[in-house]
Length: 475
Image (tube, rainbow, N blue to C red; front, side):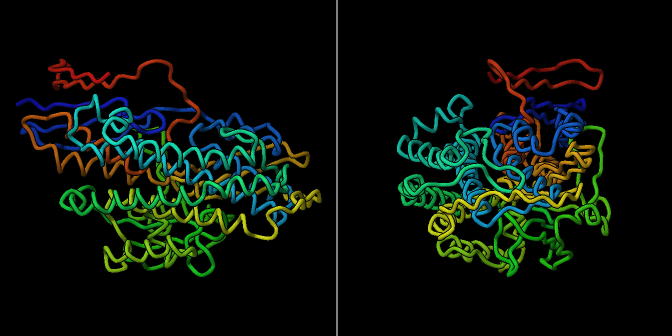
């Protein structure tokens, strides 16, 4: 048998464009599989020269799926550059918008993106293994999932005036107070949303119990874990210091985000436009770490809302309190975070300051440089700006959530391919498992790229001399 290369392009049910190449040996076993992030947008470069107060409006265009994350990270970086910390009511409102973002993004991923694999099966016919097939198979669940996402988006709309690319946070605070009727409208949908999230958790736990063999062999590997944390090591999604632990759960670093360049660096590979961050003291690749739901629940000792904390305690017992390394448990962790975000909406809405009109700090103590951080749905998002005295930006550095997980996604793709593709026949369900290794991380590679029309997946099996042996096409 001649050595072959299988190309999966594009990877489906993710945000943005990527491809996977699977290189086979002469015996049909996998030599190596690569995840290629093949988009380049250059946002950092073309933000240079813009004014710092424009960044909360410009950077959300990086992504139409999680614009709130960039919107708020940009505003927080602007606070630091201008020396204008936001008043407490403004931070409450920003966090409330962020919780809406977590709910709508996590909810969409579990039910609409990962859901077809979990509910219909990795080997289901591609014609039905999608949202349409899910609606046909489980219409009640699908409707509840749509309503959950709608509720999260409605929180964003109420605060920011629109569901996508909100106009709300500015350096120093926010530009609109919340009214009592708006608060009550948000709370109206809370209990139903919590019930839907709990339904998702029951689906996930039932699926896990029936598919433990896959969970235990599907890209299970050690790394460090990285993310925001509360002072008492509780789950944190909006603010705080960064905690980095090793594969055993031992704390390596705890630091203010402004010091991130002292802690992490970025590695480059010639087969991807996406960089690979790592912990400097351990070097590349020993210092790699994971972010996002799996990483955040590994660095946390508790969750400060009751329902999510009960789920968290059960979740952490999966590995007797030690870091959980199973890639497929990203889905479980994601739902626990969704429950926390929904509960946090209640806490924020019931805070006595949530209706305050003290929402903007107009006093400036210009610093010229600032770092803003937030836990986007996919992981830690860092915005770092340097500006002239007039507020015009001279340098912009962005480390997006998916970048932190680049090593993990690449490792998972390689491991899953080697585990499941053992030749000689390679059927579509096996290739879908390789895609699912990427999908579990819920990567956001879109960088404001929008496609019009169909995006077929074409798999070419190519011989060493470049001859196409076989072509598989999924429209």
